[in-house]
Length: 54
Image (cartoon, one colour):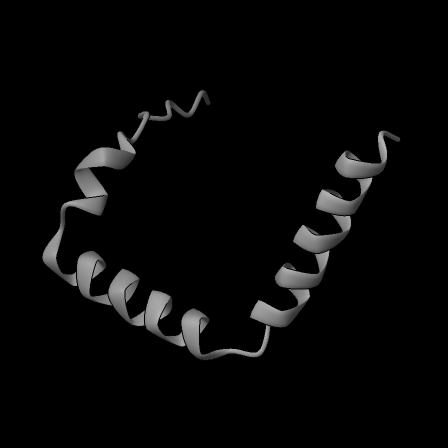
């Protein structure tokens, strides 16, 4: 028995209103988390590497 899989185009899904709502909520939660300092530190480290010419 052979199973056929259909490819799902992701663009069709992201335009769905419920998905839009969930994405907006997820982005809200992400912006409120304490991860931003970690990313800031990483960015600073990369900048330091660039300026020191490593």
